[in-house]
Amino acid sequence: MKRYRIIIGVLVLGLVFGTSLGLAADKTYTLRFTTVAAPTQPIVKGMEKFAEVADKLSGGKIQVKVFHSGQLANQKTSLLGIMKGTIDMSIDASASWFADMADYPEIGVLEVAYLYRDLDHMYRVLLGPIGQEYWDTLAKKSNLRVLDVWYLGTRELNFIEEVGVVKSPSDLKGVKLRMPNAEAWLDVGRALGAKPTPLGFGEVYMALKTGTIDGQDNPLPTDYAQKFYEVTKYIVLTDHMIGYVTPTINEKLWQGMPDEYKVYIKKALEVARNYSNYLILDQEADLLGRFQTEYGMKVVVPDKQAFMDHAQQYYSQGKFDERWGAGMYSKIQNVK
Image 1 (cartoon, rainbow, N blue to C red):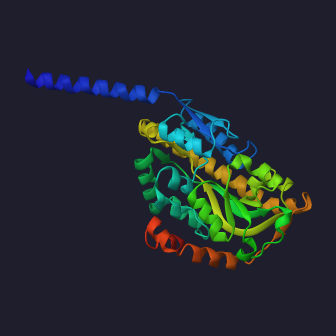
Image 2: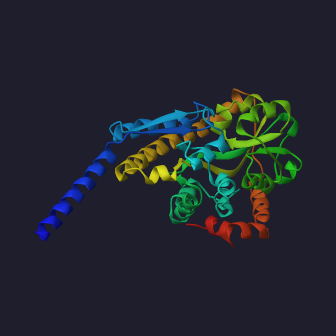
Image 3: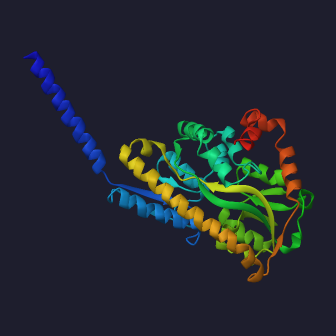
């Protein structure tokens, strides 16, 4: 009799457990996915593709609502919202933001001037063992779970007419270069030789127009989408950063999802990443000519090696080894 009680108990537990799995798999998730980017920008198109694919893969169980142009939050408040659980997902953040917002200075090394040789190198780092270790630590420290890495474009310098032609770091002395208000980003401005000026993304256009700042740095598709060509004259091809953004979700929300839902989300993000990356690369190939012929901008080819040497010297300061760990800048640069 005791044996039969044990068998019945096991069967009941199995039935309850199986039912709970079924209920979890039947649950519908509605995820609010936010960005400050304009609806015409490739990453927003990518976010919409993610929503479409996640819906199809999950049979309608994963619904993604895309909020663009800062409708739901700005870059800083979106991260705070994810950490608190009041916002589900954002795509605006990257390592520099995490360094400040999550009190995780070590991760800032993943987003500094002249770190990555090319896009393939960046992905080998950020989607490989080095990146995964940083992302896992970030999740434990902050409730922020990085799910993927999307190419944002190669960042170039962009100046108002009064600045004139910039060829080397010495030409940037005293130039007010807008940077996001995070210490790692301000260091990028200093590494280039400029006077970094912290400013929210939504304020950049008017600040350029009024001369509050002298310039900004962004990938060409972002310059185009935000119409910075209307208020600037020069694009300087420093190629100083391979920009990226990270689709990020609330860690508790992520861990509470059924495993099959996580697979659907990761696969949908991969499809969307490739779509967004393609759109950005295609735009980059087209925009330089358009900026010159259609909008009268001047494209400057600087002494890129001088900028690289200046950045290398700047990041050789002891404070960066203390912040990131000894030799991490060079270690990442040398990843094969």
